[in-house]
Amino acid sequence: MPAISFQSVSKAYPSPSSSHGQAFLALDSVSLDVAAGEFFGLLGPNGAGKTTLITILAGLTKATTGHACVMGHDVQTDFAAARHALGVVPQELVFDPFFNVREALVFQSGYFGVRHNDAWIDELLGSLGLADKANVNMRALSGGMKRRVLVALALVHKPPVIVLDEPTAGVDVELRQTLWAFIAKLNKQGHTVLLTTHYLEEAEALCGRIAMLKAGKVVALDSTSALLSSASGNVLRCAVEGELPPSLQALARVTGRVVQLPAKDALTIEHYLAQLRAAGLSVHDIEIRRPDLEDVFLQVMQRAGRDMRGVP
Image (cartoon, rainbow, N blue to C red; front, side, top):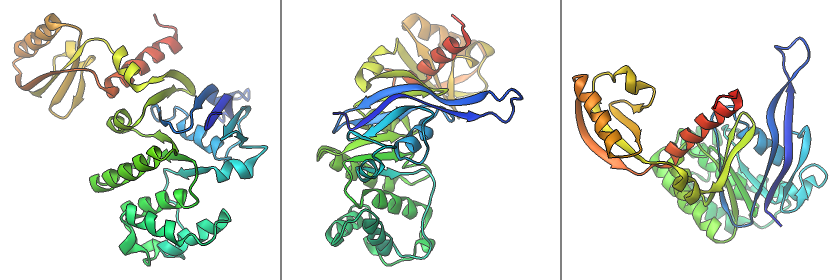
């Protein structure tokens, strides 16, 4: 039995821009299973349908067609059992301003019928760096500390399935390291983890298997190692002073001064460098590396975009 199962899940919303009442399809027949104990990544650009899929799993949104289950429990017909098996860390910073951190965790325990939970609450507070904030009102916490509390709230009833929706968005390096160390520990203990993130280096390091969504459809689903192996060639990475020539702009991934170009062989690399020199650009810190998950992600999204437009 999979820990998480989506079977032909679609979600349609009425389109306000359509005079014919055509629906906007946020999810289009998504089917995938996550095995018990997996650390699974769900990736995609903004608007791909990741959060919609998670809200359906959490029972907050009803699928137009299809079914979703948590630990064998249908999220609609067996909601209580499905919700009890699930802990969700949402993107948004949602908190109750009337309680301090410990009180919020005690009340959350009560929602799930968990009594005498003090030892686990203390472990959560210590593991997430919240021990010295236990008696601080939620309103007085920084954004990063509130994010830690959201993680603790999702885990307070010890769910076998943990869903993390952009858990490290806008947080510092210390929190990322603390969070991932704790989540990795829970995963090793048998908890299933479903992660959505735009930090693809995190997904590459943590996830054993990955699904990629685009426009509500699954466009890639495989082990992380297989996805990385599917990328062709190498990548030329260098620092460039000046604007790239037009012939390279469409190919390059540019972050400030750092330019990365797909290179299938040594001849292609030399061709790139010759173009940069011909444009009078100063090139530093040249490096040839294997493709990472970000390279794979961009290739998959570009290929999926062409397929959806019917472009060969």
